[in-house]
Image (cartoon, rainbow, N blue to C red; front, side):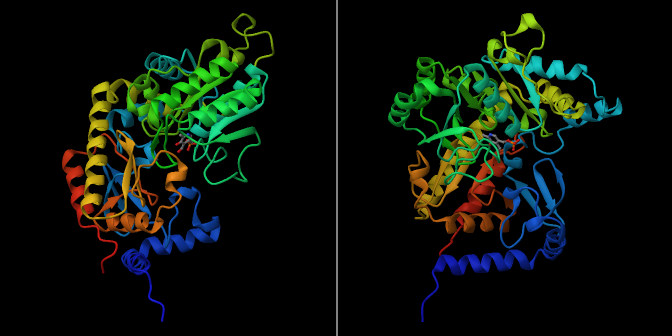
Length: 434
Ligand SMILES: Cc1ncc(COP(=O)(O)O)c(C=O)c1O
């Protein structure tokens, strides 16, 4: 008789134990499946056997409908940088709603938020708001192709710029139909070779300074600098997708790297956790959206629609988040805590003899079922996904929520004691044991 692999046996038990103590979440899942495909409306939140369903969230904790409380180490995939219900943001959003919300008109806070962002990000001279990071990237690509009158977009394997701009494992059937050229990440030679072939038709290079959803793989400084000079030589625009990485400093990863992109896309936490997206950059490129003749190039202005682009709650929350909460000191402390967790967690795996590593920068990191180093998608190809799943269930069992794929995004609410608690739980992690 074939013996079951110890990891498969471990996972079977972990999934069963998880399901047994969450009858209410299971019942909600069955109900959800009747009206939503897979019982779900955001694919990343789904996992086997069914996701726990959250009832309330406060501070740095989530409580599910079965009464389990979790330390939230996922922070809504980076949108929850401020933790749950930060007082000044809540107050600002409430008072904005008190003044009415379906305005269908411009208002004051959208100007204030735009000013705050232009002040923070040196490369952004003009900015526009969207409802999501995906939309921000779609608009950035649209203006780049219009500005350059070219069609080719260079992106990178494993890159994620939204559900319709996904370059994980081969072409995605739901991707928008741009003329994409997909290159390996952190490979300056492949980039130079591709520019040699396509350079004169390249409208833009779209890149995450650290690949986030792709596994928190930091971009090498030399690679990112090569993208900048390659774009300059070819007359193409460099677009930094800083939807995740903008938290590395008040001026984003670009400030840390000292690289000035032509366009930057933003999203996630910048409206204090409410719906948000933005794209901005040099005034001459953004001028394509300006309908006033003296403010733009000779061609007709580009339209930029969106019923909720300047929604009063997000705009007010964003002003409060940037004014009262996200100071340089707070961001630096959160990123330093993240660096400590990443390094210590990897040391725990090493001393436990597990073939696992942790990549990332500052408060963003990813646990992998491979020893590392990890510099691009190819280094993850032989990882054992079962180790990540086992880690996920072990953490849940210890009352700690990380993403099923091993992703961790610290909020500013996470403390040094919390970090110790996570490391203790990781030290007891034994996926090959009973
Ligand atoms: C780097 C990056 N770009 C874009 C997006 C898309 O943002 P949204 O989910 O707000 O559409 C994400 C979301 O995870 C992201 O990580």
